[in-house]
Amino acid sequence: MNSAREGGNLLSQAHQLSGRVFSRVLKQHGIDELNPSQGRILYELWKEDELTQTELAARTKLDKSTLALMLDRLAAAGQIERIRDPSDSRKRIVRTTESNRKLHRAYAAASEEMTEIFYRGIDRRESDDFENTLRKIIANLMKGE
Image 1 (cartoon, rainbow, N blue to C red):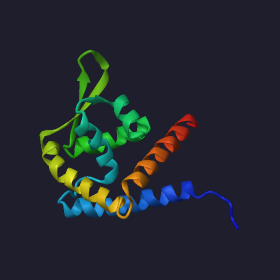
Image 2: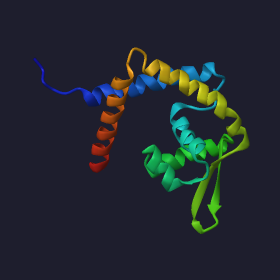
Image 3: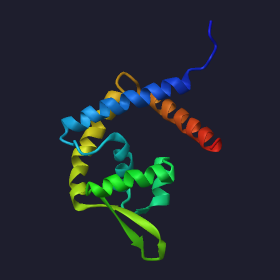
Image 4: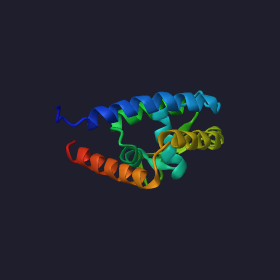
């Protein structure tokens, strides 16, 4: 009997599968211009618009160079804009555009559908335990960075 833990492999599989399913769900909701990784950034901006790139990196757990590249693509697509922080010209503030804010409702519906798919057959206690465990894993991984 193999006693090796499979958590990392299982998380990787869940990440890959959920990305593919979410891409399909986004397309069904008429959102072809965003991928799930970009949605992670926009999700944070829809919760609180006008965040610094440092704040976005912390909230999305993306490294700064990866985030910068993704923000470049989102800006080129007209989804976000970066402006200078009036209190510190070295900082950039990221905010959504008007055209992006129009996508928010469709994206929220797609996210709700994805949540239903994700938690199908899992009761509230199990999902709470699962999310708490994931938070602990994320904290452990952040300590190892």
